[in-house]
Structure formats: structure tokens, C-alpha cells
Length: 303
Image (tube, rainbow, N blue to C red; front, top):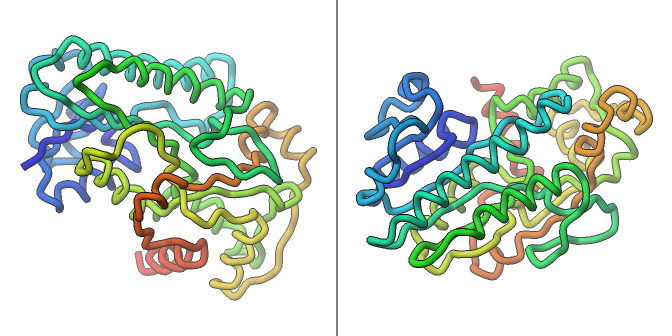
């Protein structure tokens, strides 16, 4: 039985991943600031570690580490909170890499989250893992975050996972997308021509499990659907499923007034392709936005 340590296991992705891996007969160890809280969320884990514990003592039994740690980017971007977004990612990754670089008894794979915020915003350009980074705040966060991972030394290996927008039942984003339809209409932000690169949570955790189990799975990967969509197409898909086709548009300038610098994230347009996952014949269950939204909307309505 493989044993996986998950940092950030109590978050939305971490909870789903822990459950999935446990069903696949992996042994789970969690790492967090508040192990007692995580015990309530993931009671089936073998052990719950704190960042205050000596991780070095655990590495003999660990096969892989998945690091999902990081403050949410959905809160207001004050100067203080922007520092938290950055350092909650940098410092946790740095600490894990330092532990591993001082442990050479056996190879351990580090699977570290990043994001497609690495890429610039464009309505025309298609991005894959070979593309150059942007210069936005989130791009700079991703660059520094990934640089910490790249400091990992042999015999260990790493996978950097650039997550697209993760679609999952109960998530705040999905609730915000569906809320206007309760009043009979959908919302299109800005022009609606922005590219929306996404991945269904079920495909995300399957890709993460492949990263654990496949020794050839190393380096940088875009964890996104092979079918990015324009924002207006996303709204159209939801309206069609709910039989509520009417839409309202919120102009760019109003988003910029309301959200300031954070509007660069809200209005970003990134057409990102999972080139390496496609090359390795990874099969997506939800390869179109229609399939993904039908599953999520119907499961939400049943809940």
C-alpha cells in the first residue's frame, strides 16, 4: 500500500483527493496548521501531522507528498493579503523541499500545486506548458512558487501541476455562477470573449493519482480540460441546462471599479491546453463544459 502525505488536505481539493485516494487503497497522512480540525474532515487518515512536527521522522514510510497549501485568492487583495497569498505558498513549499533535500535514503516524489495564472492574459494566444509566463501579480506568485519546487534535488522528483479553474459541487465559484439563474438570467462578465480554462474535480484527482502512480510522470503539467471555453459559452451552457437562456452583461469598467487589482484575475482570458496530459493519453471523463456542468448542476439539485 502506498502512503501519501497531503499538505492542505482540508481544502476543497484536498478533501476530495483524500477520499478518492483512500477508496483506491492509498494510506493518507495529512499535514496542516490545525490537525484537530482536519481529523473532523478526514477521519480516515492514518495520521494527522502539524507543521510544528518534525516531518523528517515520517519520510521513511512516505512514497509521495502532495502539496496543496496556499491562501485562497478569492478574498479581497489588500497589500497584507497579497503577501499572505504569496508566502503561504512559498514558505510551505520551501519547507517541504528542505526536508526532502536533507533526506536521501530513498526517492520521494513531490507533487506541487501551481496555477494557470502563470500565463499572461490573451483572447488570441493558446498556451501550453512551454509558454512563457505573464507579468501579473498571480504570474509572479506562480513563478516564485515553482522556483521553490525546482530546488528539489535527486534522488527525489517533482511534478508541478498548473491547475485551471476547478469545478466542483458546493464550491463558491459554482454557487456564484448559478445564483443569477435563480432569478431567471445568467451573468456575462466583461465582453464574454475571455477564455475560461477549467477542469472537473473528478478529472483533477484522477490526474493527481496518475502523478503518484506513474514514475514517468514528472515535470510541469497543465491540469485543465482539453476544451477551454469562452465565458459567454459557459453561461450559454448553464442557461441551456436550466432552460433559462436570458443573459445580462456586466461591463469591464464596473468590474475594475468594484475589484481594483483583483479585476485582472476576474477578467483574465487564458486559453490553456493540457498538452502533456494529452500526449500521455490521459482520458478525461468531462472533456466538454456541457458534460461538466450537467454533472455538477444535476448533482447539486439532488443534494
